[in-house]
Image 1: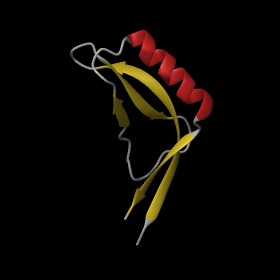
Image 2: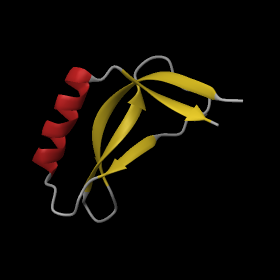
Image 3: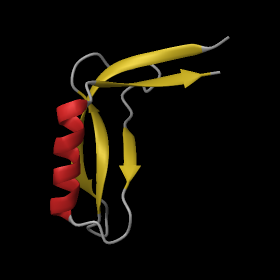
Image 4: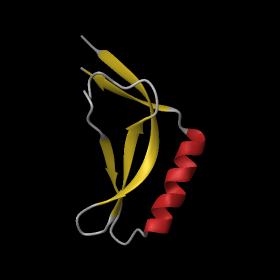
Length: 72
């Protein structure tokens, strides 16, 4: 059976232990029960600056209102 889980998320910028930025989808409303309080993160290419990551997060937040995960 296929089930799709939906949630409302916003993109934020975080840094790993080495100071490299990455993007995180954080709940901004309805959370997906499938994640049970976890997070989805997006790794960025080496060399991506914090300013570039912030710009990317802003653009994504301007156009994306949520996320979905489909389990087969």
